[in-house]
Figure 1 (cartoon, one colour):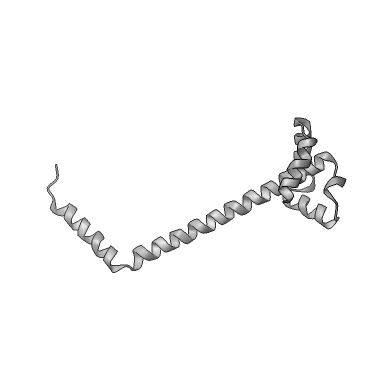
Figure 2: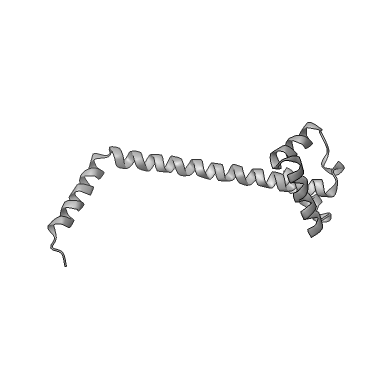
Length: 111
């Protein structure tokens, strides 16, 4: 909801120059997380923020959402890899089939 509200407010106030100012704002406070924490700590309303600070907050929130999504995808990939490793490592049927296929390849004449 916050992302949508920020996008709405910032579209009305947009512009390339503001985007550059917003990026500088994020850098000046030490990054996206610090900006979000600073605004939350001071209990500022979205409408009370200067336009470039509001856009900076939108950028920070978007960045955090992207990082969280990447972390979720990474965790999911690790879980799938763990499942695959467990399946191939413990299933005697799979291991026997792999041995059979390897032996079959050795028994066939080359060329």
